[in-house]
Image (cartoon, rainbow, N blue to C red; front, side, top):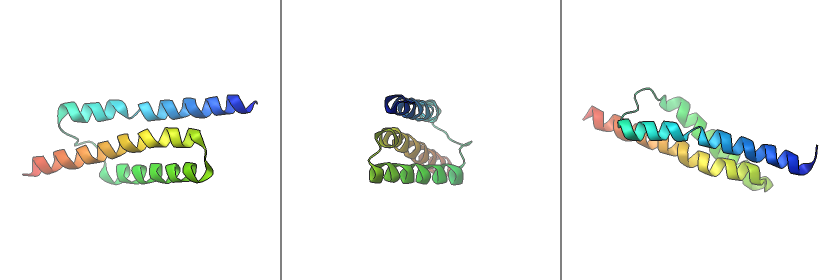
Length: 91
């Protein structure tokens, strides 16, 4: 398989896995609640994405970097919104 095709698969994977979080962020934002989000699971996921990003940066692998920067932003957004709306509800 050509290196260009391998890179294309990497970028396709990056795009699909990254945009998969967008509907969750929008849903939490619109509903102003995140009761069904597991904080331990999403925290572990977010930390894992940060590790993948670090790994990609250390290797200089653009598909890993391009995939994980926006995924980290979206996953961190889910965490922040979840904490925000849960604290608001507890008051």
